[in-house]
Length: 382
Figure 1 (cartoon, rainbow, N blue to C red):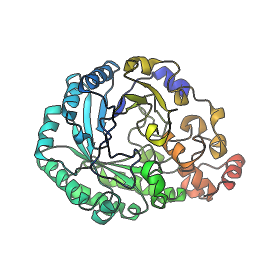
Figure 2 (cartoon, one colour; figure 1 turned 180 degrees about the vertical axis):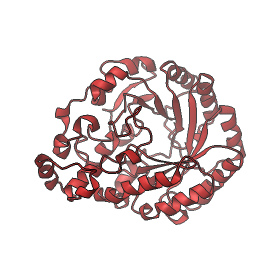
Figure 3 (tube, helix red, strand yellow; figure 1 turned 135 degrees about the vertical axis):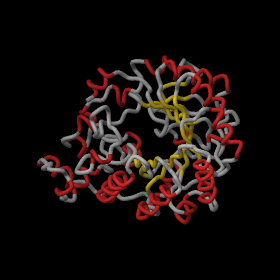
């Protein structure tokens, strides 16, 4: 699979840009320990250079993120710089302080859509974020829809909200939301200290079919998307994926550093913004800083992003090492692998793996597990 991706070429098609680490909430599941801004966040001129470099690298879409990106006083200027250079830009906000001024800034920036985080109906959402945050987020959503914006919502799945996804989806649809992304809550950052909120691996056996069902029910008017943390393979794989890669509607492995790039507010560059860094006591996933080298030189460095670009199937361990999908899957989402296991390449949060472990052949879309897969699965502890 890596050889195929090499022939397609590496370019940062999609970027998530943490404009600031400042945040006005302190969510139980926050993976980045957001709260106070970094002392060394990029200046506006430095951010402009990054925006120009992304356009030169043929980046197609940038999500302005945080922290809470609207706490960056010049977020709309950075967004405008990108849109003026042909890059599609959206934003993901917690909606706590989404004022009319923010709507005006969003228009000035030329955003393609507005995104808000919502993690359940009011009791569930407020429990993991902040009392009153559901009401504020819904106010932002309703005002955005009324003003003609395409409004999207991102929700993380946890043990508090996982049984209420049908109801949450209907609520969003009733309020005019057009896009809903579902992702697993992963034990990174604050959620690592609140692991009781993390779903069990075997829960994937009903969550994956549920997300596929929600996607089918939503249709084109209400697009439901499972994030890269959710999967992999089995009976609902094609129904779960949005578009895949071209005509291939299946998971084709982590693309951090291949077609995805993450930029921290201090200028550090990673293959994916979610990968741990200094806030987690980690440095190995930082490929460089735009203060030391231009972004294009970091991206094209033949030694950079080697965990995906230089992947070797010999890196795989445990069940992943014998899995029939190992060459294309490469251990699933890198972020999920690092969060859940001591070995990134032995990811327990996999639909196919759990179906084999529990003998649920009816969920495998005709696949018959090999003896090696059954043997490896039998050694897996929950």
